[in-house]
Length: 333
Image: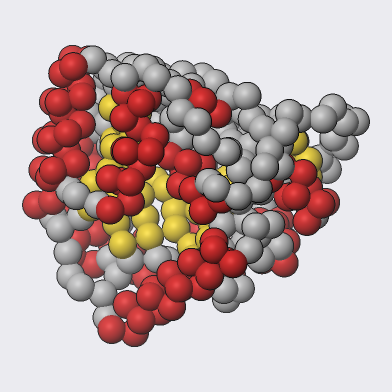
């Protein structure tokens, strides 16, 4: 993959420093918001519950209103997701809108709709990172996100993308496809792309322990594509999860990490919807303080790396207590 221009690298470095300042210097500032821009996806993977095959994209002006509110809350970084975000015709406009408000902006895609035109549009908009999800070499009934379908797009990204590209795989989709993850990591490395691997969770976001063969493949993948962030995440979270053991940590979902569905409601994460289930445009610093201090009973066996990572900065501060019942949230208009 070509090295980004100096101006892009300096901009990324500055954004990283601002993120670190918010992470260390504040408590009640969201570090990452994942914002669904369309629930529709062009694939139907058996293990995914974050999509449908009929929804229209969230209107651009509505998404911009939500981004503006996130910016007002001081949100450090934003991931535009779905469904499949490349099904939103104005994805690049949304990237630029968020970048103009000082946020680090990334997106998550299955890669099927990537083209040189889309890459150039996202370059021009200032996208800073893209995660391409690939789980196996050939599609099956559990995951359609296969290397055979998108390797050509990886080549395009390697040649033309000015943003960071990470190929992400989920370990544990099927035991028979365990070695596929190693091949995917090797292919990503050949194109000069980073690779990461997560542990499969069930419908509630909780752990599914790995077999000895899967653990060996995980180890090999982390050797092919080493990363300080992934190494830290492994030692603090994933090692226990892979052994079927719980973790002791303070989940800051609803505060440091926000998951916003297509209807504009804030949830702890994609697997724990309805909590708090409040409209983003009504979400305030008081909501952030409450969720920051709320103990999540699902956290010991949670496998969601993005939530782990955004909660790390408050590992040794900010006591939590059991959730206090409150009135049902207002419907999202």
